[in-house]
Structure formats: C-alpha cells, structure tokens
Image 1 (cartoon, rainbow, N blue to C red):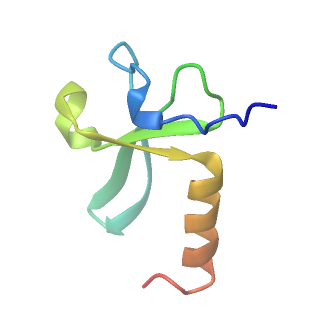
Image 2 (cartoon, rainbow, N blue to C red):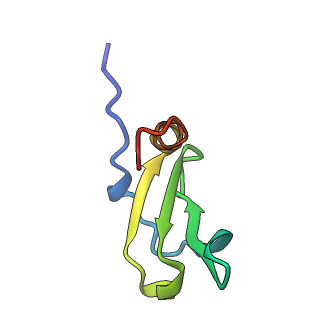
Length: 81
C-alpha cells in the first residue's frame, strides 16, 4: 500500500489566480487592514495570501486551512501577542 505524500503547496502553479482583496478591522481609525487571498487551484483546503497593497506583484504565502485554523486558535487563546 502506497503512502500518499502531502501536497507541496508551493509546487502548485498559481500564476493565473486572481487574489481578492479582503478588508476588515482597522489598525487605527483612519487605516483599514487588508489582505489579498484566494483558494489554491486544485485544493479546496489551501489558501494563498498576499499583500493587497502590492497588487499582482505581491509575494505570496500558502497555508492549509488546518494551519490557518491553528494560527487563529493560538491568537484567540492569547498565545500570539
């Protein structure tokens, strides 16, 4: 029985993905926080994140939904300050 290897998120071609600007929660009263995000092609459980201010030239980071869920849970628990 072959063991299935995990998907290397950075090997997936995402050059045609249009990142969507998502905003919410201001850093200050005059500045809104935004991020560029999309679902990684071929994987409903992987997300691409970039800097919305840089547009199409933004470098991106890729995470599984489980990784992001763990990050948010740690933040909400006060483990990340």
